[in-house]
Image (cartoon, rainbow, N blue to C red; front, side):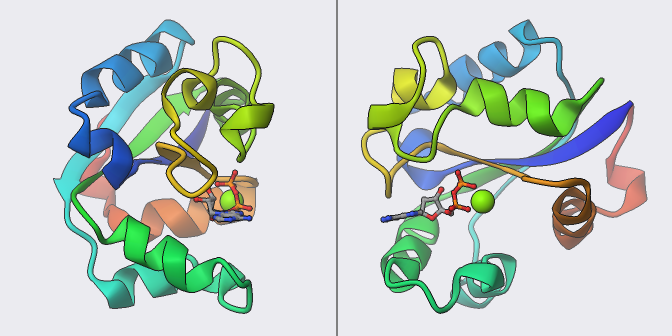
Length: 138
Ligand code: ADP
Ligand code: MG
C-alpha cells in the first residue's frame, strides 16, 4: 500500500466538481483516507511549491492556488503515486489522455484542477505538510 497527496485546486472547487473528481479517484481504486477543505495562505502555497520558485509561471501559479478554497487529500492504494499521476493526466490538459481528470475538467495548464505527488519523497513531504497521523484513517 502506498499513499499520495492530492489537491483539488481552486478552479475545480469554484465549479463545484469536487464530488465528480472524488468519484474518478474512487473509481480508479484509490481510497480517500484523509480529506480537508482549506484556503491556502500565500506563505503556505509558496512553501508547498518551493521547488518551482525560480520558474516564470511561479507568481501566477501561486495566485491561482490562493484564489479560492482547495481540498487536500491523502489517497491510498497499490502504486497510489503513479496510479494517481496516470488518472490525473498531463500537466497541460491539451496533452492529457481521454478519460483523465485533467482532460475531463481542466481549463488550461494554469487551471488544471488537481495536484498529485510525483515521487515517494514528495508524497511523504506533501502529506506531512497538511496532515498529522491522527487525521489519516485508512
Ligand atoms: P504537475 O502539477 O503536473 O506535477 P508541475 O509540477 O510541473 O506539474 O507544475 C506545478 C503546477 O504549476 C502545474 O500543475 C500547473 O498548475 C503550474 N504550471 C506548470 N507549468 C506551467 C506553465 N508552463 N504555465 C503555467 N502554469 C504552469
Ligand atoms: Mg508537480
